[in-house]
Image 1: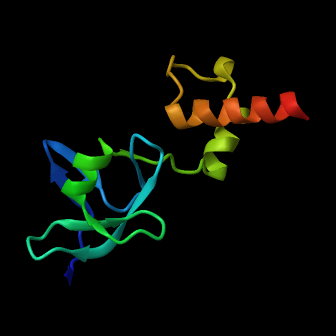
Image 2 (image 1 turned 30 degrees about the vertical axis):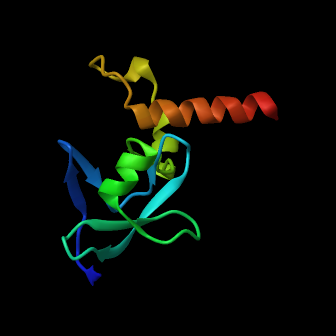
Length: 111
Protein backbone atom coordinates (compact mmCIF):
# COMPACT_ATOMS: atom_id res chain seq x y z
CA UNK A 1 0.00 0.00 0.00
CA UNK A 2 1.44 3.35 -1.08
CA UNK A 3 0.27 6.94 -0.93
CA UNK A 4 -0.24 8.96 -4.14
CA UNK A 5 -1.73 12.32 -4.94
CA UNK A 6 -4.60 11.10 -7.11
CA UNK A 7 -7.60 13.29 -7.87
CA UNK A 8 -9.29 11.25 -10.60
CA UNK A 9 -9.31 7.63 -11.74
CA UNK A 10 -10.49 6.24 -15.08
CA UNK A 11 -12.48 3.02 -14.65
CA UNK A 12 -14.38 1.38 -17.52
CA UNK A 13 -14.34 4.65 -19.44
CA UNK A 14 -15.79 6.60 -16.50
CA UNK A 15 -13.70 9.27 -14.81
CA UNK A 16 -14.21 9.09 -11.03
CA UNK A 17 -13.42 12.20 -8.98
CA UNK A 18 -11.53 10.96 -5.93
CA UNK A 19 -11.78 14.33 -4.18
CA UNK A 20 -15.52 13.83 -3.64
CA UNK A 21 -17.45 11.26 -1.65
CA UNK A 22 -18.90 8.58 -3.93
CA UNK A 23 -22.21 6.77 -3.43
CA UNK A 24 -22.84 3.17 -4.47
CA UNK A 25 -26.20 1.77 -5.59
CA UNK A 26 -27.08 0.90 -1.97
CA UNK A 27 -26.47 4.47 -0.75
CA UNK A 28 -23.19 3.72 1.03
CA UNK A 29 -20.61 6.50 1.03
CA UNK A 30 -17.11 5.70 -0.20
CA UNK A 31 -14.12 7.98 0.32
CA UNK A 32 -10.63 7.77 -1.15
CA UNK A 33 -8.17 6.97 1.64
CA UNK A 34 -5.24 8.61 -0.13
CA UNK A 35 -3.49 5.26 -0.50
CA UNK A 36 -3.20 2.90 -3.45
CA UNK A 37 -2.55 -0.79 -3.97
CA UNK A 38 0.75 -2.05 -5.36
CA UNK A 39 -0.92 -1.94 -8.80
CA UNK A 40 -1.75 1.74 -8.31
CA UNK A 41 -5.50 1.27 -7.77
CA UNK A 42 -7.04 3.76 -5.33
CA UNK A 43 -8.22 2.36 -1.99
CA UNK A 44 -11.75 3.37 -0.99
CA UNK A 45 -13.29 3.12 2.45
CA UNK A 46 -16.89 3.07 3.65
CA UNK A 47 -17.45 3.59 7.36
CA UNK A 48 -15.47 1.27 9.61
CA UNK A 49 -14.94 -1.38 6.92
CA UNK A 50 -11.41 -1.98 5.71
CA UNK A 51 -10.31 -0.22 2.53
CA UNK A 52 -11.05 -1.89 -0.81
CA UNK A 53 -9.55 -1.21 -4.25
CA UNK A 54 -11.79 0.99 -6.37
CA UNK A 55 -12.33 -1.64 -9.12
CA UNK A 56 -13.52 -4.13 -6.47
CA UNK A 57 -15.92 -1.57 -4.97
CA UNK A 58 -17.24 -0.84 -8.45
CA UNK A 59 -17.67 -4.54 -9.22
CA UNK A 60 -19.29 -5.57 -5.92
CA UNK A 61 -21.36 -2.50 -5.04
CA UNK A 62 -22.23 -1.23 -8.51
CA UNK A 63 -21.49 2.03 -10.25
CA UNK A 64 -20.46 4.99 -8.14
CA UNK A 65 -21.85 8.50 -8.41
CA UNK A 66 -20.48 11.59 -6.69
CA UNK A 67 -22.41 12.71 -3.63
CA UNK A 68 -24.17 16.03 -3.95
CA UNK A 69 -22.11 18.91 -2.71
CA UNK A 70 -23.66 21.48 -0.42
CA UNK A 71 -25.15 24.57 -2.04
CA UNK A 72 -23.01 27.64 -1.40
CA UNK A 73 -24.30 30.88 0.09
CA UNK A 74 -23.62 32.64 -3.23
CA UNK A 75 -25.76 30.12 -5.12
CA UNK A 76 -28.60 30.50 -2.61
CA UNK A 77 -28.44 34.26 -2.86
CA UNK A 78 -28.41 34.12 -6.65
CA UNK A 79 -31.45 31.83 -6.65
CA UNK A 80 -33.59 34.20 -4.63
CA UNK A 81 -32.39 37.58 -5.91
CA UNK A 82 -32.22 37.16 -9.68
CA UNK A 83 -35.26 38.65 -11.36
CA UNK A 84 -35.93 37.29 -14.87
CA UNK A 85 -37.33 40.67 -15.96
CA UNK A 86 -33.97 42.32 -15.27
CA UNK A 87 -31.96 40.02 -17.51
CA UNK A 88 -31.59 40.77 -21.21
CA UNK A 89 -31.00 37.22 -22.35
CA UNK A 90 -33.01 34.11 -21.66
CA UNK A 91 -30.59 31.93 -19.71
CA UNK A 92 -31.75 28.78 -17.99
CA UNK A 93 -30.75 28.58 -14.32
CA UNK A 94 -27.96 26.18 -13.43
CA UNK A 95 -28.99 22.94 -11.69
CA UNK A 96 -27.41 24.10 -8.43
CA UNK A 97 -29.27 27.44 -8.56
CA UNK A 98 -32.55 25.63 -9.21
CA UNK A 99 -31.83 23.20 -6.36
CA UNK A 100 -31.21 26.13 -4.02
CA UNK A 101 -34.55 27.67 -5.00
CA UNK A 102 -36.35 24.38 -4.38
CA UNK A 103 -34.68 24.07 -0.99
CA UNK A 104 -35.83 27.56 -0.07
CA UNK A 105 -39.39 26.79 -1.15
CA UNK A 106 -39.39 23.55 0.85
CA UNK A 107 -38.22 25.35 3.98
CA UNK A 108 -40.93 27.96 3.50
CA UNK A 109 -43.60 25.24 3.07
CA UNK A 110 -42.64 23.50 6.33
CA UNK A 111 -42.31 26.71 8.39
